[in-house]
Length: 443
Image (tube, rainbow, N blue to C red; front, side, top):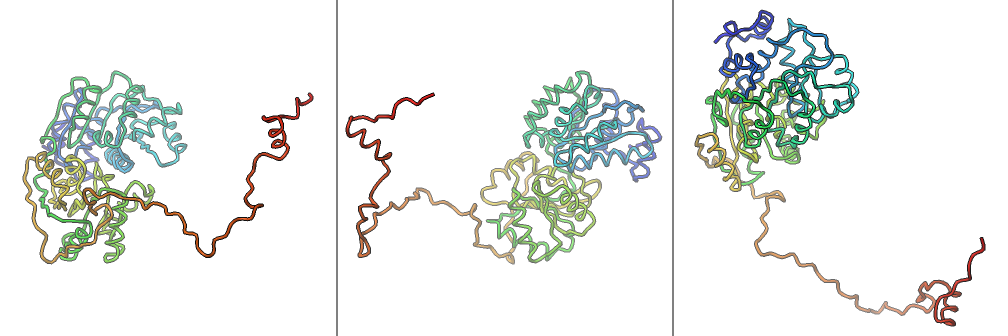
């Protein structure tokens, strides 16, 4: 269905035309009339199918001009990068509209954001923590919110935002429209839907956890970190089509280590991004990856959610994620829009349980392949990979008294004295069998 067939006004159609979009994706087509009706909506579709536009278009279609200072639309997202992305999407579609849009998140000067909010906003995109901070200052009031959008709510819960979400619910008006969009819906998310939503309608284009058909997946049994490194270098050196590779690892320290290892051969073609990096550094890494300056970007799950990084040729799960849902979001960074994508998984023996859960969630079997003969299996192990032998006890060596050798000598009598509280007190104690004082002090 073309956008012109939906109930979209001219200013939005002109903005879509400028962006080169003519046809609505299934989630956009299905969600538009339901959101326009005013009902609460839970939208489920694969990553990369245009879920952000699916809620922005009907919101802007219904948003009327106003000069009131406090925002009427609130979009909650888990990360700073996603705030910037959603704000950017709103601005693209409001090229011919008078709509005030702002984004707030932690790690930056709150005073600047207070000025932004005080100047007046129609649409506010925020992370939960900074939203509460601004509300506590009294500058931001949420009682005028008409529509609440929760984007990637399962990641918010994974990041420990449950308490903040409950606080935000107390600040919002009871009468509002609630919208939620995600690729996966976990049991925790189901509980949140029951608490926040009123008789929501599910718009489910694909079953939760279903990956895109145009993402080709493969998996390899790899024993350890340094063998994975050897295999990744082998792939990069022998496949010219791996020109924009996103590599996911399990921790920040692992990301830095892998960046150092790959940088020895690939130099500045490798970048790294995680939450310990400054905000400007993170934005710069993503920008350089987008424009082709970085061939490889190593990341934690920080950017697995919602980041619209176009034309990613390959996604590599260097370390397997902790949950099956995270795997779906990771591989969704490739194969976006109408493009095809490749996803590779490096599976260790300890990962076989999570790999089984991932296949069960996807309702798809991906066989584990052996390493190519050309890849050297490394015997070098990280400390975390070294096995502890069962039954081995760490026995501390007892301290042994020093042997008296030829250099030993007795202390002199004057050096054997100990502090006993002063001679006067000792004399009184010997005479009266108990300590005596000098009497009461005169006042």
